[in-house]
Length: 97
Image (cartoon, rainbow, N blue to C red; front, side, top):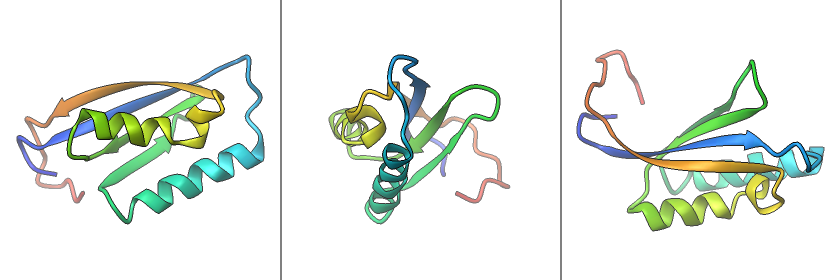
């Protein structure tokens, strides 16, 4: 990570009306693992609430939306997401991303 880089931040929130199956979750992890060969991506789940966050780099906002909307968590509507374009201003020299 470098100052002035543009990253996208996706915040995922559980949809209480849709049951998250083991298969959906497994497909979600496989999907994210697959795209890490193509883009920079960091992701994980929140420990205190259902949901998670993904930080990733793509060419533009449209590509970021396409990646997000192809994720099985979102396709199945088990989760909804918000997507933000994030310009880095401060990066610690200890950040090894």
